Image (cartoon, rainbow, N blue to C red):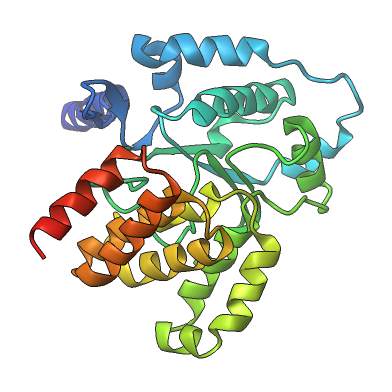
Length: 295
């Protein structure tokens, strides 16, 4: 009996330590952030995060409209991928948690995973928790029943948070934001690059139809680039330059990726175009001078 008690006490203390000690890191600015899976309580109790969590939760108000639809969420698990460095995560995650609580739903149904910032592990978890989840923006809320996804909210609501959640509960969810990025993510999961290039015009037409602002595919390109998927990054950047051919920043992103992929001559060509469009973009000007001096 005494041995059983000691084992139980050890397991309790071990689990408690894990709950109190989530993975943290210091980014390039020396700021503390979370990485990987963690318990909600850390956002409420750690002073690094609690101020913005509390403020944004308090700013949220339920509309007071009929919420009978909430019963449809009682068997739903929501995987929430966020960045404690991300402004949208700081706003929408606390408000989502507050709405969930106001609806009387169980917070244990919410599973939290924080992703890194910075180039080295950009929007990645320490154990690759984001892999296979088509994560390219944070926060991303993935709604699941019996381990199967049936809806998601990407970065911010399409309508407002309560309306989006009601639509999800009623089975009429709005199409998530960033449909062009989602199209490419799903395409790269489903087909080989050879197959994609054979039908690249068809895919380009679809992306062109779906894309929003130039940042949509630029961000996706960096997600691929910093997770060692350079062929996907290059194709994404190339498509974006075809859609936004007069954007210096879009072209600059493509040129930088080309250079990293040892395609120096093509990179010089694109950098020249960048500087023609925006002679004040110092990073491109300096890089072009450096490359031409060593040509």
